[in-house]
Image (cartoon, rainbow, N blue to C red; front, top):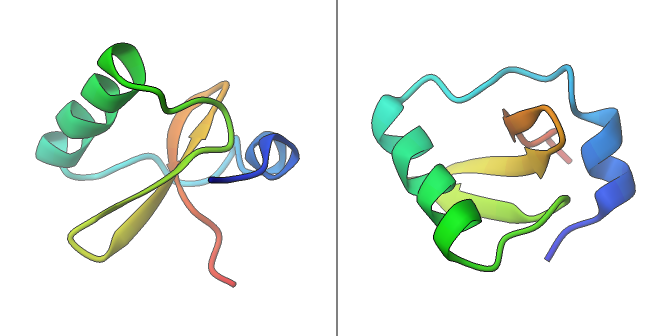
Length: 60
């Protein structure tokens, strides 16, 4: 789930800080079905897939 337009607005947001999370996120993108705008939650942190890479999702 997610919105590609929201992803475009979040490209400047903070990148993942945990290398373990980034490894999982990249695997989901390359070997899975996550696309631009996709939201992924890992241990309570929500990430957003953008053209600039994974970013912390904006808080609602």
